[in-house]
Length: 249
Image (tube, rainbow, N blue to C red):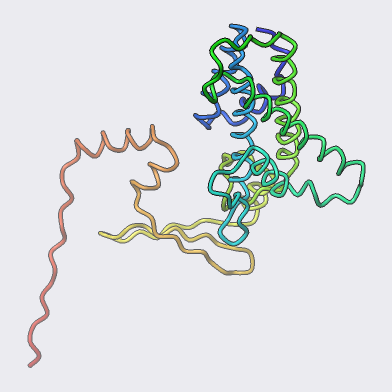
């Protein structure tokens, strides 16, 4: 396999390691490239579409919908949605708009080549000749250019922590700001879930009721299992007797 055909795709797939379908599609692209199989064209087009979907879903909200409304969106529809999500069309520079438009043309050409010659998309004439290596290289390089363009624009974008799928570490600057100014207190009462009180600057509080098991499960699975094993060997909690009130004289 000629690795330098898709450095941008490999970088993007390395960033979105938690996207199983993207990883599977990239594995298929690598495999078909090694085999000099024309199906790499199908895989290249699919990688572009999946990356577009990752970008769109990172910014889509019910209040600001970005997903294509077509029943069966095309690659062009998904690319347009990704460009809207990244606000790449809002730049006033005409030369940059032409650059954005050129990526649309690349996507259209890649899609057309996949439809005409990609063996994994639709049934083709069984005696159709295989493509030459430069055809496969052109398709993969086109896909790589689009993915690299979107990925680096995504890395520069301001993500919404409410809808983002990025891990906590992504928001390092915001995390440091919260940690520097917000305190934490814990109120625990027998039989009830503890209340975490986040102490905001100015004296306000954000109370959060959460079960200990839920907190451990969400934050640290190893700690959850350790706590579970310890709890299994512990005696059951003793309920405190309830004092009955006597009748009024």
